[in-house]
Length: 366
Image (cartoon, rainbow, N blue to C red; front, side, top):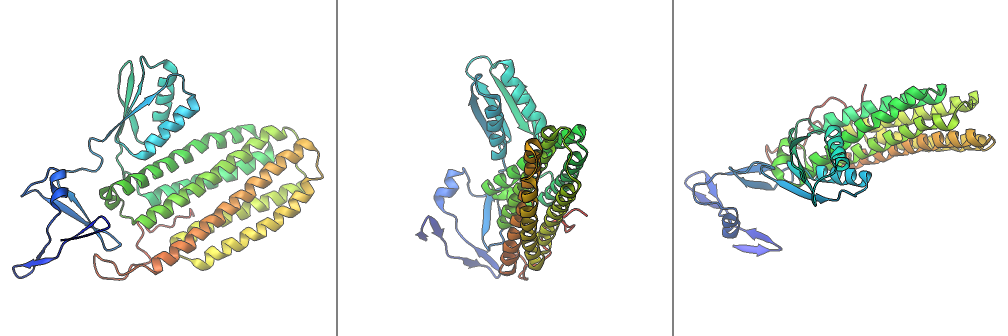
């Protein structure tokens, strides 16, 4: 046996005509309560390594997280703490208080359970609420989550601009409310990736490599941020009131909105197709949007106070949306290079294919 840097070395031995065997570290076997005759499972990894886990182990089974909270905690702070615990991926989450849990704290917990994908209230006592994740780590493929987020973000951006043009507060309110749907999908994807990073068995069920998980998580963050800017555009309806946007300015802002959404569509398409040329086109388009921004900003500066403030908010959000799309294009370039440089597939001896991602329907919505 050889050991170096925390790794244990074992020589491969051959027994019989075609069987290869390798011994296991004694400390690892004993610490997991294993003995002769127990079954181990092996999962090949894309990097050439192999994960070993016992037959009796089920990913996440029996893991329970107990969280102590205060009845006097700020509601927003408490909700954000619960989101962080949700992303950590524990199947059972017990929220406890010192003494009786008050109605305000219970209301936050119930609201959290209703808004997230998976948590359901399993039991309640005077001092605690127990939530159980009823969907598990992989009820929906990650690429499908990205596609759904893209469809929602695109619709939110379109409706936000419609609300801005018509000053329709009902459309604006609907855009703001839909932001929760994007958030919950983003948090759900974060939970999936976090659980996969902690447990290789979960990673195997996702049918994705670690670099792919990282790429999708970055894409999800970009989409979530663009949704936030759609909300900001919708919120300018209240700021502008009855102030009318000059026709030329409205047309220029529509051009920016179209350019930002086209950039997002093309960035997702370049990510899906490993298309470096299309990704570079997105980066070039972002620079064109910057030049258009400069011209619009000069004109906005000549407008009176409330109108200028509202238009500036719309302009900034459209610009930021375009640059988030360019961030996604850069991710697409990095991803294309990573896939092209990947070694031969260790499971079948063939080169990694450009079509290896799960569900080959395009990420960019049609």
